[in-house]
Image 1: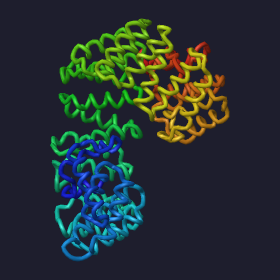
Image 2: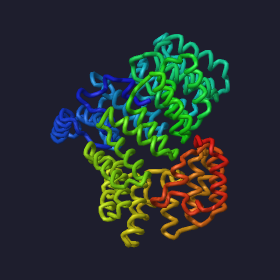
Image 3: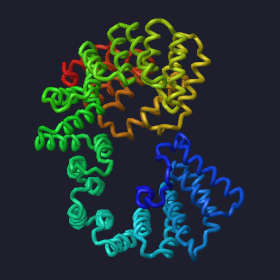
Length: 535
């Protein structure tokens, strides 16, 4: 947890949210304040108040490098005694949090020890110190500090949760459960308490209990923000069965609550289980629980993935009839129309999306592919170029543009430069199929490296929904390794990867299994697993 949420008094008035971390400081009030701090430091470089204030702005914008420089410089001059003792303590706490955020707990603990010496009864100092000791494996020290929190505040949930975490590390699961129960009893209407208990239960391997807690957090009607929804969706990525089971139980207990089937559908869809997702979306509509345009758009996406294009078109048109302000909906419509062979309509739909949002990457990609279908290759390349600029960290539009450049614009050298850019991207871990690195390597002629890349991923990544093996099937198919491609295809289908469009109809770019579609074994596998496609 970031320190700024524990000590709100350190926030600067007028500071913009941390989401501006990648965009720079854009708030005019904050910009004016920064000009003042810069002027004060030009007049006196040892002005630790200005260093603290300027560093705090950088901190709020997640610019930890500059914040760390200012806090470190400020600590050279901030006195440890007297009226400004509090400023030094705040500098120490903020620098310690940066050290923790950047995985340097030893340095953080040194600052927290000094801060503790300045303010031995500070709840915030002790809490941060205990958390840092826990990270360092100093469980006895951490437990002592967590207990000290309770002496300062008998109703301290942080104290009980912290002690429970230590108990789990010591394999005292009974004690941990008792402490967690006490934490919830103190504040049973606080959603964040359930989120915290879920995290500890996850440590204990109690995945069903953790999911139940996240669902309880969502159902508390607590107006205070918590990240239960984000945590539940993330939980579905690694503990899909437990997440679906928990939501199913919640639906049975509260059949008129549309949130639970919606969450179950959304998580199922994110795991390529489109048939199950559709069932829940339809349940929501049929029971009149919600009639939200996003549900119809999600249904359209599911139907498109299942190759049911006419029904998909009906649903996306229904969504667009309810709102015209979603550029992504037009992109969905464009892709559906292109799958139906209506390239001109696809181009018109994608252009309509760009009227809503000229920088929308999905609409730019949809427009490019519609233009490819119409033979307008130069303008298709220009659209993909815009997509690359608007989402410079994403490999897909760049790889797609390389494919277009090589296949239709007869410029292999330019395509090679784009492929090399894909392999040089560091936004994704090298063992993540979303990096598409192996596909770029294969087209660069580095076949062995490409095959080693996918082999490493298959061996090390838990493919919970079949998407890893789908990408492996595509890469092996493109590498003219049909047997390996079909082996991966079967594993992917076994795990429920139900994107029929990708299996049967996707042809653009290199991330598709087109080279093995004529294999009888390919068709037999699709028939054998037809149930996951709702066929």
